[in-house]
Amino acid sequence: MAGLTVRERLLQATKYLRDRGSFTPRLDAEVLLAHVLGRDRVYLYREASLVLNADSERIYKVLLERRAGSEPVAYLTGHKEFMGLDFAVGSHVLIPRPETELLVEKALAILASWPGQRLVVDVGTGSGAIAVSLASMAPAGTRVKAIDISPQALETARANALRHGVEVVFQRGDLLAPLQGVLAPGSVTVITANLPYIPSGAMEGLPKDVRGYEPALALDGGSDGLEVYRRLIPQAETWLSPGGQLLIEISPEQVEQALPLLVPPRWLASAYQDLAGRPRLICGLKQSEHLPG
Image (cartoon, rainbow, N blue to C red):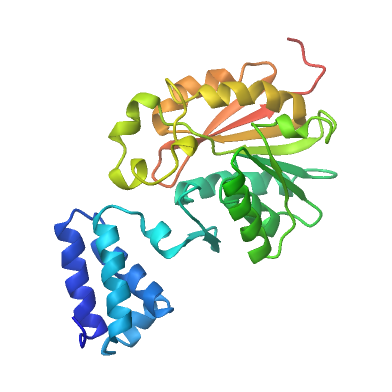
């Protein structure tokens, strides 16, 4: 293979991945080659006549073989873009997805209009993509805490916060339990949560690059996919300020089951659609303490 130009090698790699079932063979081929060369994808077009050296070809071949076996591109490169920021990822954290940007955008809108001090808690932070994005983009003075049960995930999240030069307080624990004795109840402005929501029975039906590589702990949401959220919601009610909001990501098929979990009059719940027009985000506004019920 040595001696091929970038253009020629990309054509071969695209066919190789397409023949092995990739849904995005050209994109995968480009991202992996750009990673090998330490450049962006624009470089591949600008320098299409560049001849690959033997070392680059050897590394590229290995990555292509791993991708052909369904290993996610983000794990192969160790990076994934989210909210315009570059995040380090690994096999112990869920790969950030574009649809989750809706949750961040909604949280930013809430924080922008919030009077007084702002405090965000991101539950199940994983790579820290949500928490770090909020810390990077929220109004000045916003405090951000992030919680995860996995020490490996927290290690990655801390590295991403350091990478982007933002201050996030990380705590290890189950859901909001680490806030006990640290914060006063009713003091949190926004709680964000992209927790496991795949029904256990649907795990085997996930694409191979998801079920075979991404952590089951971050995917399996129990019998109907909402078991973790059922535990979170009463905890969130304790910690949110009146008028504060709980933002949870769900599967579009779960909206009719998820909305009733936020029981009125304590909660005012709304569903929001992603860019594909599918309900993806549930926002629960905690009603004022004096309301009946």
